[in-house]
Image (cartoon, rainbow, N blue to C red; front, side, top):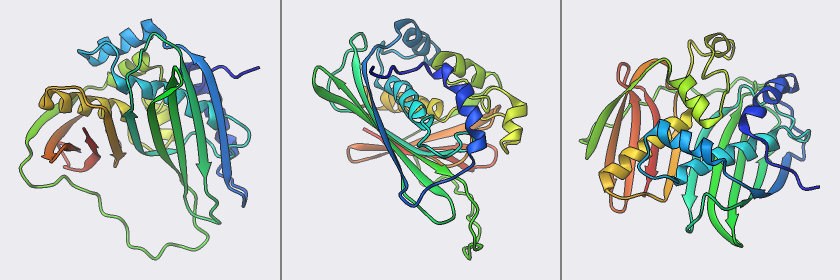
Length: 281
């Protein structure tokens, strides 16, 4: 029987229960994959997401990450993935549309995860998700995570200084007001009800001073600003998540146009600490 792709909201509790795994890895590392056939987009959920994000498009390609996240999380729940899901740090994400697609037609989704072995120290986890329709690959998504783990020998490197935003004049800038309720609002629209976004108590338990915003919300909002600046839809976005966006806060977005590519940075308006950097075109 072929596996069915679970809804993201049904994966959250099982994900929290993996906390007892700790961070373990065999010398052979971790390599796993899965294929989900006939994956349909819930049209009501899609329209809720579009309305919440105020998209002009009715089928934005950024929504494909919602499906990719489901596939990645489902793979993380496999017994072969011997790392606790809570506490993983989402380092980066890249999503690229390769061909036309139809959100009302089924997708085939191929997902693969890899964690190279290291004797000690943090582990880097990479997931690649490919989307297919009518025999053609129409999009691909690559996500990179960090699993924190103590080193047997203390690192000799000096502490990393917080990155700050660049100083040259941007082609476009705007300030975002991130209200406290936005985490819960986006959780309902996206299905990502991870409690670090919705519960102050859980966020503090996981080491944050207060709740944090979904990283993909920041990425999508930056993508929308880029499309407004360019006057057309974009087909690729790559983001590095540098620091949490706390709820509430004010964030400053700046765009630089370099040849055929837009470079963007998001930073905390109060501290100037860089929270996200990326490119799109």
